[in-house]
Figure (cartoon, rainbow, N blue to C red):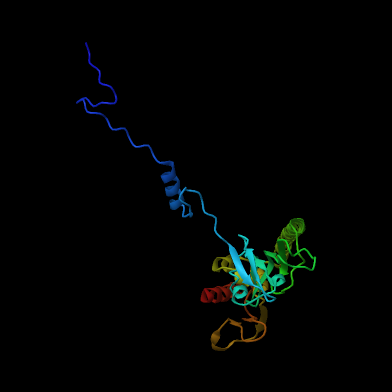
Amino acid sequence: MQNTVPATFKTSGAPVTPPATPDPLESALRSAFDQGEPCDADGNPVAEDRSITYQLRHGGVLVEECPTWCVLDHADDIAKPIYAEDLVHEGEEIELSITTVEGDKDSILAARIQQWPYATDGNGSDVPYMAYRANANYGESMGYSTPTDVEAEIRRTEAHLYALRQLNERLAEARADFLDKRGPAAADLTVADVRTLPVPVLLKAFGLAVVEVESIPYGIQGVLDRTGDVPVVVLLRSLPQAGRESLVRQLLVSMVEGQA
């Protein structure tokens, strides 16, 4: 007959201590601690108190809860009494930065959420709106934009970007056509190109004129002169055509190698 030992006892007969049941509160507190979230004794997240008390110029105080999207610390508003209608909330601004050809910095399409909660002029600024500026250098925004207004501007911008992309494709075609007709540019030519391209193509690419003379001092047959407004290749008139082209090519190879 086989003896069996209950699971609540060890084989020695001593009772087995059951594992402790995790405390749900402890787990909640530890999870909140790990995530950096403040919590109360019951493990519930504690909402940040964003209420600010302002002194009013006409007497009394104003207690206003700062929206979570506002990035202002309102230090100036707290430091001295204000008019309620001058209180403003501003969100973080986004913008598209560009650099001009002169190296100056500029910004376009600047936007942020804004609100004058106690405005009384009836223009809609008392509720959150989008302060949208096509050019960030100008302080004036394009009205008090609602989500519908902003969506309309987004669609207009997307249409403009699509048209800009199409225009860029036309630019690429125009440049390719121009370069095909013009031929290679001197700055793009390598030594290998100068050794292989036809001499008339090279003369056009480098903008060279050919001048023939009866004689050149020191027995030189040809020289590349770049001292004037227009660079010229000076050649002996007595040289055969093949010799002329060979000499021009040698002069250009030496020039390109010297610039490398």
